[in-house]
Amino acid sequence: MKISRALISVSDKTGVAAFARALERQGVDIISTGGTATLLRKEKIPVREISSFTAFPEVLDGRVKTLHPRVHGGLLYRRGNAKHEAEARECGFEPIDLVVVNLYPFEATIAKPDVTLAEAIENIDIGGPSMIRSAAKNYESVTVVIDPADYDVVLENMRDNKGETTLKLRERFAIKAFARTAEYDRAINSFLNKEQATDASFSLSLPLTMRLRYGENPHQHAALYGDFDKYFEKLQGKELSFNNILDISAATNLIAEFEAPTVAILKHTNPCGVGSDADLRKAWDKAFATDKQAPFGGIIICNRPLTEPLAKVISEIFSEVIIAPDFEIEARAILQKKKNLRLIRLLTPATEARPATDLRSVCGGVLVQDADIAGEVKSGSGRVVTKRRPTKTELNAMWFGWRVVKHVKSNAIVYAKSDRTLGIGAGQMSRIDSSRIAIWKAKEAGLSLKGSAVASDAFFPFPDGLMAAVEAGATCAIQPGGSVRDEEVIAAANERNMAMIFTGVRHFRH
Image (tube, rainbow, N blue to C red; front, top):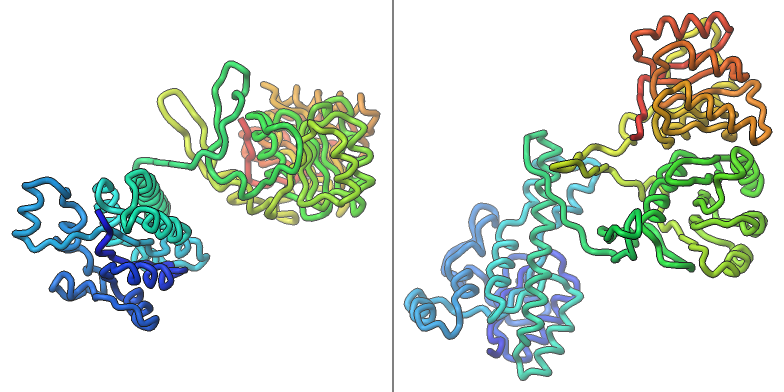
């Protein structure tokens, strides 16, 4: 059927006047509300107020204006159905063939740092989603448009079909409309559930970003959902794998800890080495020196544009992925010679890219938690628990190690200087074993642990882990504290003239 009547009510008024003018020129009767109607009148476009269409005034500060049988009857009655047609005539329902609606900006409202609960609630749209759903349900006869980017598509479709839209277009727009209302409701649910701390079900729906060749292993099917491409741009190389994406995320979370120019190398989401220096080439040397074997086939990330000197040295080893906020022209030319090497540009600061929520699949459900960024302990905080206070150099070394250890699989131990890692022990069942591995790795790399700091992601349950660190050369330690044997551990540190800080924050990473 030819579109003869349109209801236009939009929060985002981009392009709506030009769209309405084009509809009016095709003889479409336009009904509108509030600010949209005011805008169209200013543009000299004939428009009927919704209250004149419904014969009922807008009330309750505009909360009730389109929630009326004449609106939803005009959208929902089935054209060509004799019973529906008769009832529509009896009730005085005029057909509405086109609905142009976008919703109150709830997501933008709650993104404001100082938003109040009352302000958020006032930006929950009721009439808009109701009209969208009514129109989308009856897409066999009604066209629903929720995106200003689709205005030209609709006009072109009408021009090509003598004022009508095709069923294929209406169906596509209906699916898009239901996806939008579902997304909108989830945003409201998530905000209220977090703001008011009530028990509620958890729901999540994300658009498909890409289908992957396979998952963690070739026999597993996999896909990526969400807005990954908002934060990362692949400049060259093979398509990203499931494991690449996990590593890219882990690398971004790690580099977000550092403000100084820093290079980090990761393998299987674990840091192999991290180094900081004003010269990125020197930062690489510090990171690579920690472990010269593990980086083969690894992930490299830096928080400054990647330079030509750094590109030259990186190109000497095999890497899967290199991530940077940008690549100097000379550096890009060097790395492009390796056609399979994936170069990833980080499009936002790493702190903006890291997720705020962590989800894990478990038998029978999903675990949901805040990402390990809340309640972070900053450099200079923490509590000195030993008789000897750490020197400034020791403090810097402890906090460098602390930034890294939270990204190492538990049980995690990191030996560090103020600008580099020296030894990393990851994922052992015993903390003393993680410490031994870190010591062994440092020895294999030819690095001395004399005067180093040892960082532990959780408390030392016994003094043995701390004593092993002292024997290896560490002079200070940083750990959360909280063990029933804390006093024994502190006593052991005092006996060996060691300085130690308790942060009060644990960083398990299972």
